[in-house]
Image (cartoon, rainbow, N blue to C red; front, side, top):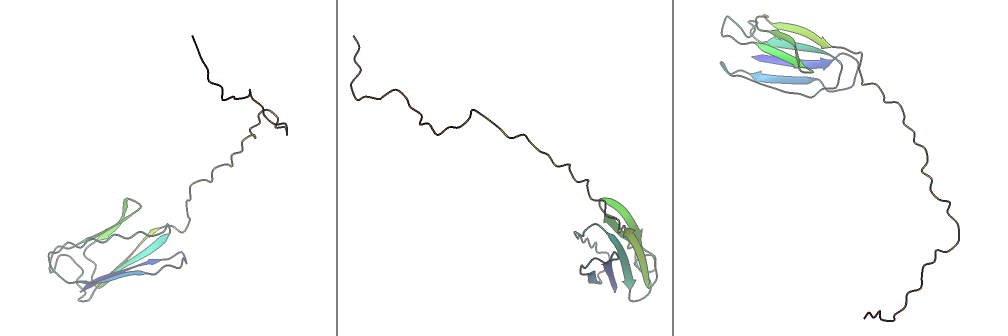
Length: 126
């Protein structure tokens, strides 16, 4: 008898989240969703118009967004709307570009590198 929807209100194109089928009494339902930063509208509805608390039980809901509680309720009649979040995105600051000086070593020339000649003569010692 209870259902809810979560809709992004910033104009972002994401599918609304909608759940139905919360019909069992004395049952804890927990749902988690990853959503982009933005503003949202949560609408909870009850088919019988008695909310999820008090008249026929002691239900409630709590919404957490970005780790903080942003909305909760229980006694709401037929439906209730809660808004949370913001359309102003607070992206982390862009790091300043870094540059590095080129690594230079000894000048490279076209001269071949030579070393002492290697012979196949055995080395003997006394």
